Length: 425
Image (cartoon, rainbow, N blue to C red):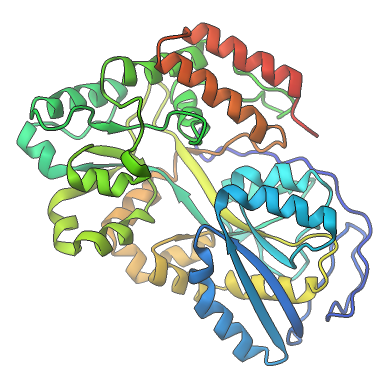
C-alpha cells in the first residue's frame, strides 16, 4: 500500500479543565487547548518505554535550561507494559502528564476517552510523515504527536551470501532461493529469522505480507476487517512455507537476540529497522558492519514490497496535571533542530520530514534505503480492537507454520474473531 492512509476513529473529549500548572488558555471548541510561547512551569511527569528514557536525557536538559521554572521527571518502562501501566494509572488517577506510545497501541489507548487532542501550537501536522500522522487522526484532530518512525528493512550477512553465491532477494521466490543457497554452506540450518508465537508481534510481519499479496486487513472506510480473503490465504501460505521448508526456525531467536544470532552465524537474515545499525556497530565495530552486513528493501510479493511502518508517539492524558508543560515539551522534541539531533544521537528516523534533509542522514546509505522503503509501507489496522485481534492473528499464523492448520482455516478463524470484536469504536 503505497503511502497508505489509515483512519483512526476515536471519541473526542469535549471539555478540558484549566489547570494550575500553566495551562493559560481555555480549550478550543474542537476540544483542543492552545499553548503559547511563554516558558513552561511546574513539574512535568513523563513515561517513556523501551529504553527511550536514555534518548530523552539531552532533550530534557535543554528544555529545563530554556524553561528554568519547569522540571521533568522521566520514568522508563518496558514496551510490553505500557498499556497495562497506563490503564492502571488512568483508573487510579495517577497518570503522567505525557506518555510515549507505540503506534500500534494508540487507537486502543485513546479509545478509553482518556487522552486529549494535540494542543494547537505544538506542531504543523503537514510536516509529519503522512502515513503516521493520519494514523493518529479522526475528523481532522490528532491525538498523538509522532516523535520518530521506523520501517523494516531486509538485513543479511553479505559475507555469507558471497560465500554461497547467493543474490540479494527482491521477490518472495528469490527469498526462498536465497535461503536455499545459504543452507548449502552447511553452517546455517535456518537462515531467516521470522517472528512466530504469542510473545512476538506476528501481525507486524503478516500485515505487510498481506499487502504484498494485494490485500488489506480492512475495508476502504475502515469499518470492518477483511481477513478471510484469497490474499490473506496467499500471505499465510508463504508464511507457512518459510517454516515448513526449513527457511526459518519454529523456535524463533536464541535468547531473543537477533543481532547476536546474526553475528554468531546462527541466522543469516532478518527484518529490522534502522535503529539496529548503532546497536550492531556497538557490538562489533564499524569495520565488521561495513564488511559483513547489508540492508535492502524487503522482498516483494505479487503486489509490491510493502513493509511495516511504526512510530513512537507522544500523548497527553485528558486529566494531566500539567498538560501545558507536557505539550510545550513535545513541541521542543519535534522542532527541526531537535529532530536532527535525535538522528545524530540514536539513528532513529525523525517523524518530521524536513529533518530528512539533515546532511548526516542524507549521507547514510542504509538510511537512504529506509527512505526508499517508506514509499511502500503499511501500518497495523489503527482501530482499538487490533491489539486483541493480533493475538488471534499470531496464534492462527503459528498453527499454519507448525502444520496444524491450513491457510484457509486460519484466515477463516481470524475473520470469525474479527467479526466478534468489531473494530472497537
